[in-house]
Image (tube, rainbow, N blue to C red; front, side):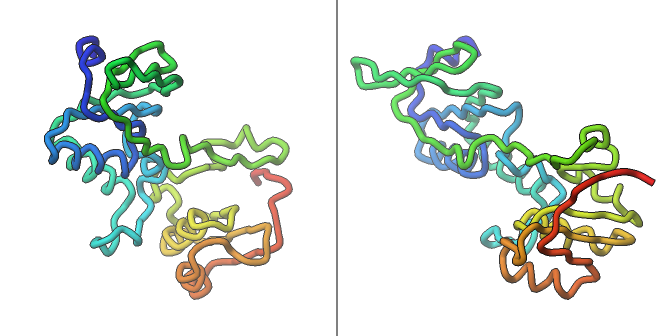
Length: 219
């Protein structure tokens, strides 16, 4: 890595999500020396946060889990062996006299590049935590902000809070496995894609709109 920071790359991609990974592949096709700088300690952007969730809106693919899509994107991006930098957040950009750029990260490391491509999306994903008394003591046991392994919910009673695509998609994914699935949404209408909401209404899912979780406990 020490030598890599002294090189001036043709392009530096800030953000190692799906767009950044494909950009690295395309830059390689154009015979450009390429570096990816990712703030997280892993690639894939938001995909690794819900690796077992099925995605249905990827062009040319009927259905694929987020984890498998991440693996394919990483494999494709590695074709031309881009330089990868993890756990660094770019905080400063300077244009040098020769027209190139110097990027400085939060670690103090500097990166030289002829061009910069920003593929940061919405930034690093931070879970919206359940703000009710005592919720923290149940995190990772009875309270989850993303299912790491869907099988752990087989034959369990599951309540999902939310009304966006993630909440509805997980309700659809867990409905065939769980003993009971309920979904609580504070608004009257869901914000998820209309087609998935229509599918949800056909499943054995208890839908509770205009509602919110006020307390949490285990029996």
